[in-house]
Amino acid sequence: AQRVTQPEKLLSVFKGAPVELKCNYSYSGSPELFWYVQYSRQRLQLLLRHISRESIKGFTADLNKGETSFHLKKPFAQEEDSAMYYCALSGAGSARQLTFGSGTQLTVLP
Amino acid sequence: GAGVSQSPSNKVTEKGKDVELRCDPISGHTALYWYRQSLGQGLEFLIYFQGNSAPDKSGLPSDRFSAERTGGSVSTLTIQRTQQEDSAVYLCASSPSIGLAVQYFGPGTRLTVT
Image 1 (cartoon, each protein chain N blue to C red):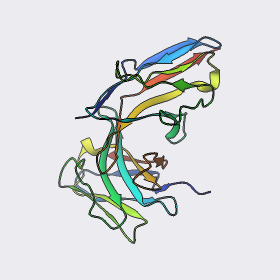
Image 2: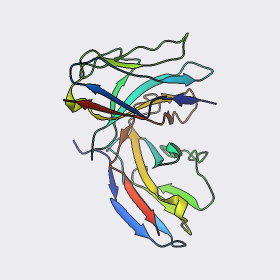
Image 3: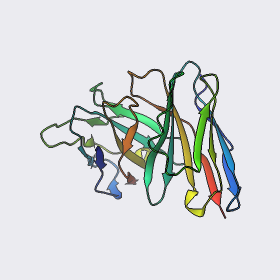
């Protein structure tokens, strides 16, 4: 069975401070990991995926297979980063459906 | 270009009534998914369509839930004899192909069962 754990429901940081949103997963094979973001009154949208190894809006995430983690990081948080962040896993099954964590609500304070 | 669209955006229904929720995927996307977002359960997978293949219904919570996809495009999720625990936001997502796991989400339909 595949599982994604986001231990923090709520996270608040001040503008300009570093931020890290934690994600741990459980999967027996080689998963594909994603971060999705949902801004207030907007649809869920892809932020980044581990395969791309890219930085989007200053965010990065590194897949650590030894620790089964995919934490999301940004060195200097901005107020516009305030949103709900979901870590998600896609396994090797035929459907490739996403298994989501419970989400972390990030608030960046001025 | 146009993204995934869903209708209605909000639906209030009485317990025991049937409801139909509609999803229009991005043109050309062969894979279509339904998810449910509820307070107690987070985001859960419901059902998956890929082209003309038989759907993967492994996430449907009960036999009151069904879905179809006509012509490989528009999909309808039907909930029969709605219960209060069906209240949630129902999300549709589409993906360009099975090999590409990135999914593009619609705005959702907020269902409230009174």
